[in-house]
Picture (cartoon, rainbow, N blue to C red):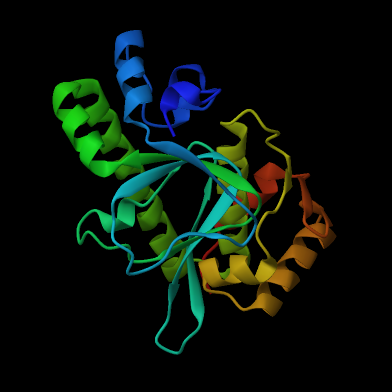
Length: 238
């Protein structure tokens, strides 16, 4: 599909400051527009790419929500991340030229496909683009380190608290409410990501509601006491 035929391009995208083109000039944005190969729509539970697929493109999430997962040795799926509008998918494939995980839509979603060879070529010509791409990669590294800290040193309720606070901060950066959210992932998927059993996640949600930290109605969550959630992060691990 020619980019000129698309109704919305990077230069008019409301998410552009959360994605690659932040801080670029109008002329550079036009070149970014030409770099985007196509936009792809996925239904809920549809797979964008699978582990082992040849790496050719990055994908900027335009609308919707995704999870990435890997298969453990015992055959179970391990959730490795959740990605929302304005974030990139596919960085896992750069080093080996093969994807190392699956990316699955958690709801009806749309992505912009960015051929990596074209991104590399344009990054050599537009220094600001290269700088921004490095920022994006650094952000992903920092996020991965944060998850390692969660799994290594926090008790269950602190892990869930950190997860919810991070989620609300990311949603707020996209113009959504910082206190009310609809979870796109299941409690089982949250547990897989945080290294917790489903029963532990459900019990933690119940404790949060009993303690007045959250109002929980199935997947609808309202944060009642953000400072209380933050206090959990400073508790001594058990």
